[in-house]
Image (cartoon, rainbow, N blue to C red; front, side, top):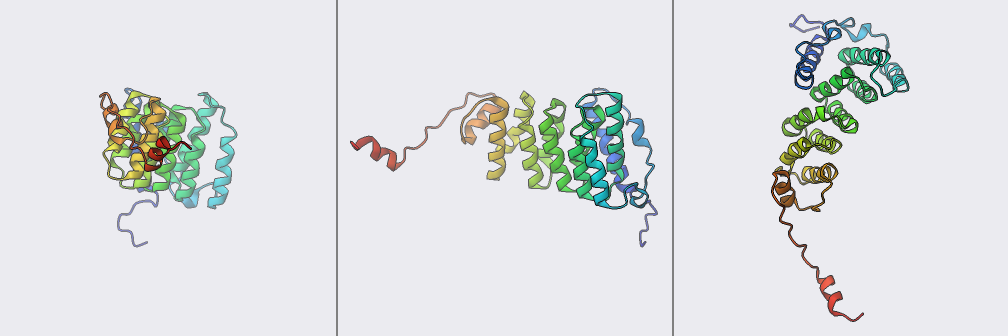
Length: 241
C-alpha cells in the first residue's frame, strides 16, 4: 500500500540476505563461487504465508531446534540448519531473527556458519550483536575477517563492542591484528573490551596499559610503564606499623 516499488513485502530483505550470504560464501568458503542452491528460492515471500502465525509461536518452534543439535556436520543436521536459514530470510520480526541466530549457533554445519556471518549485516543491531557473540563462542578462525570488518565499520557502538568481545573467543594471530584497531579508538569502553579480548587471545597481560598493548599488537616489545606508587603505599613503607 503506497509502495511504488511493486516488490513483494519481503523481497528487499531477501535480496539483502542473499547478497550477504553470497559475500560470506566467497570470503569464507575458500573458493566457493556460487550461493548455496537453497538461497535461490524463496518459498515464503511474505510473513502472512509463514507456517507460524505469531512471533511467539515461531519462537517456540525455533527453540525446539536447539535440542536437536548434535554439534556434528551430518545430513540430518544440515537439513535442520537449512530450515532455520530459510526462516530467517523471510522473518520480519528482529527479535525472532535474533532467536534464530542464537539457535543456529548450536549447529556446526557450513550453512550455519554462513547464516551467522550474514547476520553481521542484518539491519537490526540486536541481530548483529547476537551474531558477533555466537561467532565468538564458536571460536571459528574463519569468522575473524568479518568480525574485524564489523569492528572497524559498524555504525553502532554496541555492535562494535560485541565484535571486539567475539574476537576474544578466537585465539589466532589474526584476531590480535583485528583487535588492534580498537586500541586506537577514542571510546574507553571499546579500548577496555579490546584489552580484555587481547588478554584472552594472547595469554599476555599488560594490565590496562593501552600503549603497551598497541606495541604488542604491532609486534613490538611492550615498554611497560611502572604503576605510580600511591601516597598510602609510600606511608606503609616508612611506618613501623
